Image (cartoon, rainbow, N blue to C red):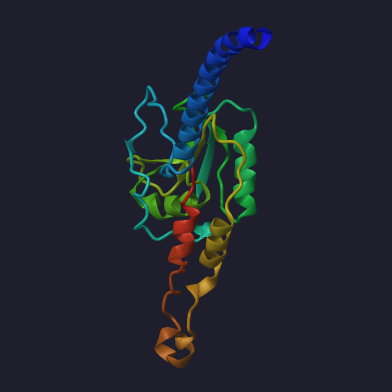
Length: 219
């Protein structure tokens, strides 16, 4: 009799427990689905807020894929602090200098004076700076590309609130090494042609696979 009296009680307790387990299972499935979708989602630059002052035309992530990158020594970068973290622009400028990039004096971003560029950052450049921006995009693949009407080749590297550490990938560093090589892998034919002695040096070349790998980043 005692055993028969306990069975309905056990069944009543088992019902709510099964409901709780089912709810937890649904929550776990939904959470992991979100994680997996995020992990396998498309790479590309983070979207930045619009400045009160127009910054130019925001380009698609792959807008510079067809632009040959320039050697680091031919790139002029100006690092701007748009994220409000004190000293970050100076630090990034020094790190670019260590990679043989000529840099101008870093400063605060006049387009985001409150330090509220709430994204990874931006590369701002004009038509004359496309090759330089193409090189910098190897190091900063998550930066939004912005083309404005500036006449010079200087590229503004605006550091946003989500910038974090400046840590170029191995592929990006390997690409820079290839770009820095004089002659870009010349086959020595100039030595056999006396008329080639005064010719302009060959443009540096870089392995397209390295460029593609350097720009693949989950942002």
